[in-house]
Image (cartoon, rainbow, N blue to C red; front, side, top):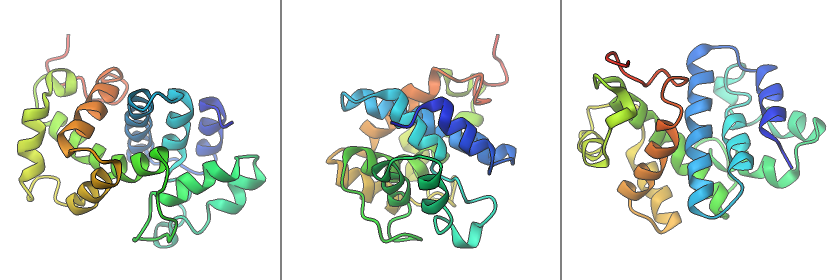
Length: 189
């Protein structure tokens, strides 16, 4: 089983840009919270989340086409690689998310972008971000406009959950790591 330490080692061989590392951490911590929600192993889901954009920095136009072979060669289990590939379903992958892990990663990838953007606009960052405030930003299509809301809604439908409920879980997971994510706000003590 992929550990968080091994995921970090592998990710560090491919990802160097700070914004991509930060995105990987946001997704990782949100995935940990999703795992807890589903009664699964949080660290394992975090490891998958951390590695989800493994080839993006080096191959942005061929995202996920340079992921499976090197990760399998590095000892990552086939089902773990499949989960990573599934987050690009319908965009750059034909691997349909089927498990709770895969559906969560598919959803959380875009969702964390809006959460991060919303938290950065607040004096106390994510530390006091409530779902109600997040949902206002989610409904404003001009806010974090590059984040695909239809994809998020599709993922939530796959999970059989409402956007607000998934967002609440992700905010909780990210909130625990506010300082590391740069989301403690400008008025952090």
